[in-house]
Amino acid sequence: QVQLVESGGGLVQPGGSLRLSCAASRSIFSSYTMNWYRQAPGKQRELVAGITSGGTTNYADSVKGRFGVSRDNSKNTVYLQMNSLKPEDTAVYSCNARHQFVLINYWGQGTQVTVSS
Image 1 (tube, rainbow, N blue to C red):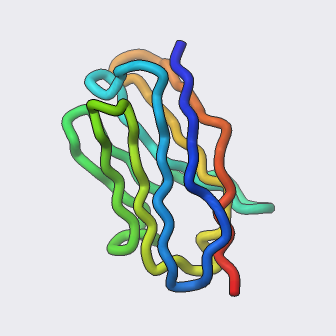
Image 2 (tube, one colour):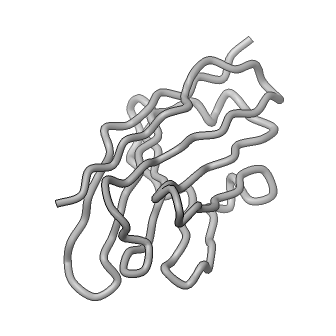
């Protein structure tokens, strides 16, 4: 079992920045792709960004150029740096760990991000 704990959400004004963190309970990055998802009220959950075990990153078109995903292997932590935030970025952001070979997924509890003036 792996526990994922997100932190760093909050209220920010449009144009502002936040950094989300996702701490894993043990070292898993060599076997898992780490993803950030978000779900806004009344909308489907969407994949925002991900980083593979090899370090390849990918982003939703809506956040390209504004968000950056990274990880610190020594801390078992993945980050989502969010810049130039817009009101439409408001959502609950969740961390996901997906095994690269077998059907195993772990989820964090989510953290609320609200972009409003």
